[in-house]
Image (cartoon, rainbow, N blue to C red; front, side):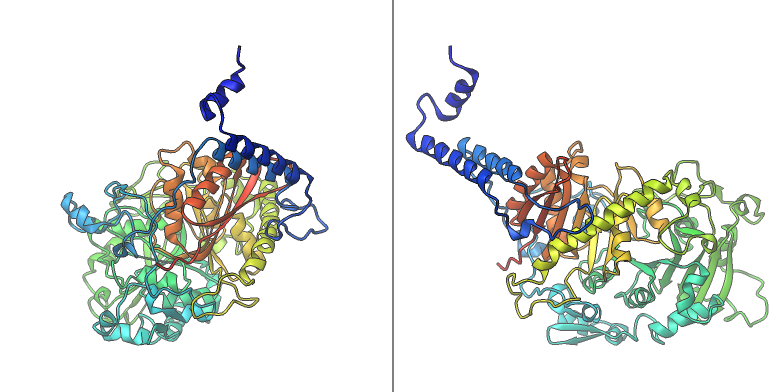
Length: 619
């Protein structure tokens, strides 16, 4: 009777295995013996040792190499050919953003502005392909120069479109040959960004805009941000400003801001809530953003109220919002505008007005909504604190939340107090331990990547290699951010990087904690495309995300194609997960043409790192 093992061999090789296969097996066994007897190690797979216990030292142990080689040998023996690399998408999809197909939305009957909204259910799967870079694409300039000068070939705005734009745009941008320069003193405000920012600070009773922290302002949601000039100035003041604007097929505000290395994502006020929880931001800013705020029975303003933390500010600059009777110095008006009437209903106070700029402050009293005699708005039901593109609702949220803390009473740094952590159900010990883990992980990530970023890797067209301390990592997307530990570690090490902290919708919702730390963050379903343009992130990081998605309705290949879309050429990917899923991920990475290496964490677990780099394909 033949053994089951021989029966399996018969299935693979047939009744009489070919001599060539037997030779291949023999040579492979010898190779495995050689691997076990070798003590050499690739320089890429090692990090210099440090005096403290390391999580990522001695990368790629020999037994890991043997396991990987066996995995590859088994693939060859089974007769499976190497998976074919994916081809490039057509030129028309160079700036492709799934979920925003206006034509398809219109055909399906969406109207009244909803055809411009996000509809991922409309996006068909189609054939898998990789979004190509434009013909004239170049690697972005290093910071800080890259914040004010970008390559015109990297964004979808032609010279004719630029020349036909209004005088306002010409003041902001200067088109010179193949570059677009942004005047740091200009923006959507006629008197310049710095003067405008200083004006807002003075209207809040502050001496200068360097004192925004004293008013409790750390995070700002900038709606319809133009090309990011105001946000760029706020970033220089150590504030976190996120630009959101509607999807635009050409001349996109979000694409231009991201190309400058500034935080931005697609988002609009049409029919759905933004993917942030209640009580998320200290200030919401709108300068001529084109939104009619008292439209839809005030639901847009109620969405702003939902996003604002108690005591937060809504700054509106728009000539059309000017009340009857011009300025506050005129005699008392008998009739209020619809905008003023509604802000009173939702317990906002108009605390300052100067020229076309108005500042309202949200109440810090959670009971104001129920006790306000002028108010006829209702309170939302409990448990409405984790929206993911839900329909706008005509009710007030967050009043019963334990997070209802005025911004002036919050911690001024990312290290939350024990009382604040208790609100989020996190112990101070767990929080501290998480930070220490990520500080050590970041140290080793940087040790691993720095020699590669600063080495003689393939030259970029028309550019030289970067020199320390500048590098090409301006932003990082943490695709499964947990407590935001990687963001905190980068901040502590004073890395010139901002992080988009993403919390998957089916993971534990830690986004409120991340936002309360003063970081940027967003809820997202990784079975859908992220609301951004192609080639907008320098590094993608995910810890445990692949295992989380193995039980989801979507496959890992769809995720990798989306990651490739949003990652710029020569960008980096660092994935941490279990061995089995990491090996599967490496196969996908190879299929989408990434350079990929599996690295052993050397901590006695089956956790592995997958470090990849996206090549600069020019076809």
